[in-house]
Amino acid sequence: MPPSRAQAAVIAERRTKLIKARLKGRLFEDIWQELGYASRTAATKDFSRALEARIAEQRDSIEIHREMEILRLDGELERLDRLYAEVEQILERHHVTVSVGRVVLLNDEPLTDYGPVLASVDRLLRIEEARRKVGERRAKLLGLEAPQRVEVLTIDAIDDQIRRLNEQLAAADREAGAAAGAEAPSD
Image 1 (cartoon, rainbow, N blue to C red):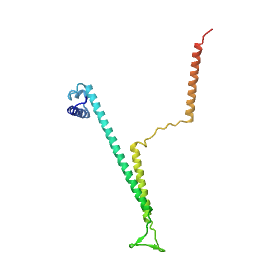
Image 2: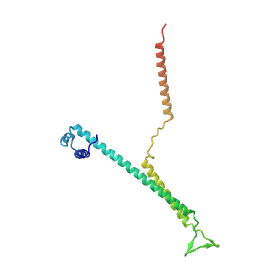
Image 3: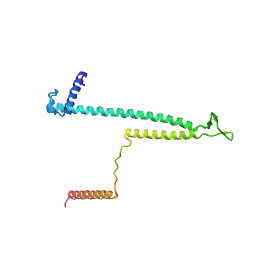
Image 4: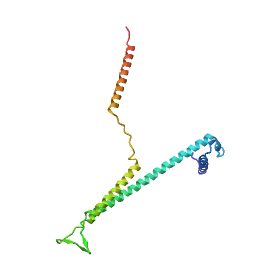
């Protein structure tokens, strides 16, 4: 049965005192009775439990923060996708040159303004760079870029392994032959 809230508070307070005493360099032999433990071993075990609980809390906290960061990055990717779509729409439109509030004509045709197109292309490249950075950060958080262990075998190493296996097979054959010879009835 788990301890009551009052008991849990007493345990937490005693553990806090125990940890503080150990941080000051005090030995279990000197503090176990003072803190109300039944023995030095009980104090040692409780200290270990306190550290294990703290490590578990930190691990949980790290996982929560990691998940929150992944959710934030996912939201950032969605925002970048929306921006990308909006910029693509601007890129697809026909832009005309305007001067002093009037459309500039060339041979009675509106003169195309490539400034918004170039600005849109530049913006799309910046959005792509931001997407790449978010993707890299996300991959790191998920451990997708963790180093992988690779074993490289040379031809010499493979030949050496084949030689050893052949020797083991030959030895096994000799033992089997010797055992068969020992079991053969003598006339």
